Image (cartoon, rainbow, N blue to C red; front, side, top):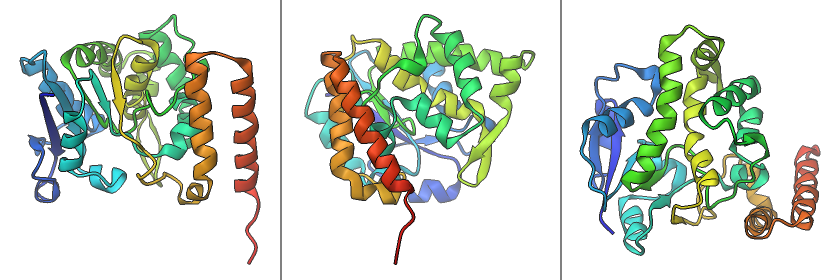
Length: 272
């Protein structure tokens, strides 16, 4: 499978630390840090003639830290099959425990839910985004995705609708997208976290992509405490996958029961 996987660098430090097995993607200018990785990804996709038979990726400098994967692992996985989309998404606890990336975002960023609702209503008005059931085969975190041009064209079209609104800055949605939200003890524009969820939305609603997802079990969890619940997380993910094949209420009932049990056990005070 032909592929061209880039790794973004935005400083001399990240350039030196990036994996030499990836194609460097220069973002030393860092002229629009408010858009994070979307800016160099957008610039590449708008200015480059893509080969229809080549899969492209644009990975952040934190790939190894977040996934335990290096360039050799990524190349080997892609070489094993001719798919349209390859996922290298970490944080299995976040993809398994929540119904979808929108519910997960509402917990991680408590003030972002209205922004996500308005943004998804703009780009996919016929899709009940909050009701979607996502699993490890269609969830993308951190833009860790490698895909053929057909995917990137659709992805860019949706993202550009939000980009245009945010850049105009004249509407309530624009102000909400550009406003800061909590992130890892700091703050970042809400639009960054909205755009990071467009790939998952696209893969969940468009079933005509052949997707291969790297096994996330060996990758770091977002919450280290969740490592003790690996078996339950596998069951939750499997139930969501099964529901995607046969939408039976029993699968959702079991998902809800197991999830509630995990949440309750997590919330119990520890004893020494």
